[in-house]
Image 1 (cartoon, rainbow, N blue to C red):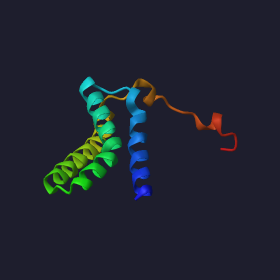
Image 2 (cartoon, one colour):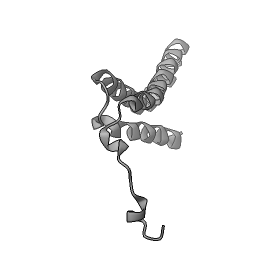
Image 3 (tube, rainbow, N blue to C red):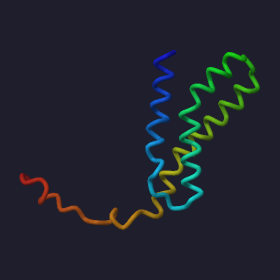
Image 4 (tube, rainbow, N blue to C red):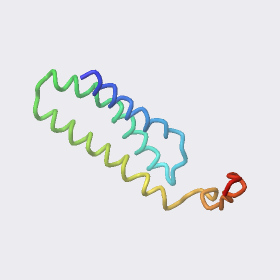
Length: 100
């Protein structure tokens, strides 16, 4: 159980690294931050809910966790609509890799 807890915490923490990234809108930035914090805090919430053994709360927790994961899945695709101009620069690989 400790390995699962640590893995889930690390997974959420990785998403928190996007805290200061550029987002197309402030709404998307807030959604990313809320979902990242929730996914990070979810293992601790799961332990608290599991100790209460309340099915209704567990179902609400599971639904909100799935929603948070979906937000983290959809937002990167939505962000593709307004890439920074540096994303369109052509890289001349022959200058960086001499054997090509």
